[in-house]
Length: 361
Image (cartoon, rainbow, N blue to C red):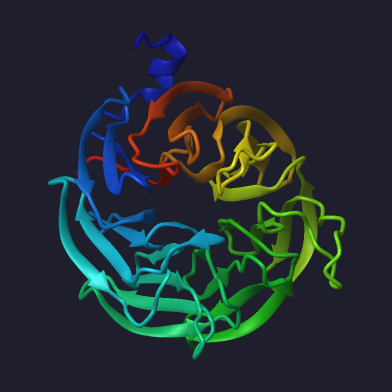
């Protein structure tokens, strides 16, 4: 593919870097060259992988296998595995089974302390929570209850002292003290999806409400008006919502770049097509200033944006579309799409988790 001068500038200095992309139904983690977007290898993992994160200190990827098949709202059973992958050798290093915990999804890494936090779903004998794993020994150290059945995404502040779990249907975000291992607050929101924490740890940005793919219902079971979609801004000091960034449609993924840009992936639905995921039009990437909350622009992306990441320098954004099974590469200075990567799949659910892996030092 011919690259413009602008494209070459955005890609400069990325030789040897790769983008790791999870294919949910393909049950793979594939690697794409960060300069050419060419697929350079893949690793097969257990069905069905969802999210992935990169540990730069040990140069390992952690991949969460969440369900036997399907999604939070429609699945055939919860799985219990995390797969550890060497992205350089492109091989599975270990499969870590966290049973009886199940439904692992959200991954947040504290590199300094060597801790991986993994959100897990509840069961009849325990609420949902967060499993703490020592990344050196790859052994669970314990769990933190979140008092909600389905914590899905999880994020920590830069200090590694506070964590936030979003809770789909539950009307709050769980705030946990990572040092004491306890739930400390519940931030009222009308259900929640993805989230990110500001670089100074003073605020969390929460996508809300929950994307249920079903008509909204009032407390008495009748049809009701849905909550306004957008991003709730949470004050970490007071554990309360103090701001709101409205969007036209529900948002799933939220990501904060190293340069202070807040990225949000907005769904655009069409009449249902018989799929459990509903009908979808191209999604939208919205970009804001994390400091001023100013809207900086938007651009079209693939169908059902589900995960967002960015390059370490904050210049490039990557948005996975799980229904289109694509990853859009976006220049975050110009908001121009530089490329669209097609990701192999075996069912309706394709590209999901993302991780940018810089070349070895």
